Image (tube, rainbow, N blue to C red; front, side, top):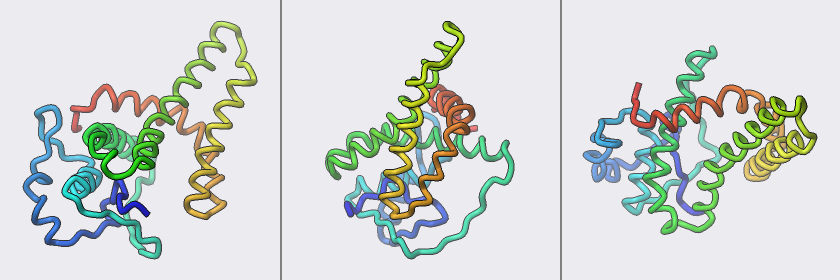
Length: 192
């Protein structure tokens, strides 16, 4: 709709050669905080394309195959790389976003603010459990409501009711991915 998909995922992306030729030097010499960076290249290339004035578009009937982690260790390493890439390139894209569209700015901020609000709700619940011995019903309701809103937005965008089922991912998100994202935020310069 806006011609500005914020991350054209590696195995699912195609670019015009003429566009790549213009950006190849910038793309191959990624630096973050003065150090070479070699992860999150798909998101970085997408941002470079948008900064150069190119459109990035979603093609709903395209079919692509990729390799995915099949055990917890590789999955968590992938999520750590993705979290670092998301934070790093969101910082790089913040100046670009208002030029693209106000909605996109809100969407990107929401994608980054949502996990922060979930983390704060989870920490509040943990503090209440440690101090008072129980978790108030409104904390659980807040987390459930945030989850359902996010999944409903995804279901509406994709026009796929099955995205509501993604709410079952919330415990994984709270107990595994939120701590991992916090670690990623504090180790942005690490490219291990």
